[in-house]
Length: 441
Image (cartoon, rainbow, N blue to C red; front, side, top):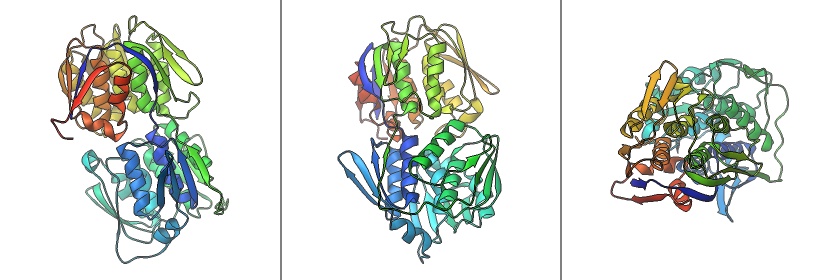
């Protein structure tokens, strides 16, 4: 699919999308809660669908009714996980990095052999973590040189372990869910150099909201489970509302700061989501922004007066793409730290951003762990490529709103991974944007 975008002035109100970070964690929590859960404001991105597909593969009853998902795991959890079976269970995580990293330890609780696969860029993302950690927890595992597909057979036995948290916090999220679902007592997980701590805060909040056992932690360096018993299953349903997505919402906020009089609703300013930190960058660059409890508004300046800024994205690497779009139209240079976190995303985002924005006349310099973006008053319309990365497609689309001339984004359908309504939302705000199906994604 191609997206064709012309310079545009935006105006209007828009509701931020549902958070896939929150939605996928809710699916995992609903699985191990061993009761009926009702998920309100659910997302419908490809990653969300992949998480729901895993639950269905495990036998959960999943019903979409009145815009909310009703998930009953009271039978499937016990049957699928605790009963040996002669044939392997097969699950597919789509392209979701969080999905594979979070569900694998949970699936390892099973006595049944499980085959775990994925699609697209996920097939090339490293899974060495599991090869190193799962055997320590009595789980047999086979991978293809540290990549998918994985074959695992448990049941996982919680033990005191020490892990590396420098690549991603998502592995820890999966272990916390698995330990909570098991009868883990007096065990701990020590974590070295944990990145993206706010995402662990989100994990702990979701666990708490679903009535799961929540570990204590010592300054995020050790997470420990005491001899607190597992919460008994009850007939009372759990109600959970998926948060608005600060990751996807960041693109709307940047578009508002750059291009027009926009109001973004549905983002909780008290959220634990790491990408809420985008507000710091928007303040530092001098955007005409007003933050209230229920909405974030941008004035009529249309991006005039924006200046380069300094930002540390180590704990929120998904902000690099929208911040590069923002920095591209700021006066002066912008410094964004945390480049090392970008290597194992859907693409090597540091190099991809450098290449694709270079086509639009924006110079990006990479030095060690820092990205320098030189702002310009002459963003060029160009033919760019998403590299099958949803955030690259959205970043290019936002920058195109301020470009001189037409911008064409190849493989623009990559947005379906996280924010399938993105182009429609931009159009509803007045963006001169069209899509076609000349290239299938």
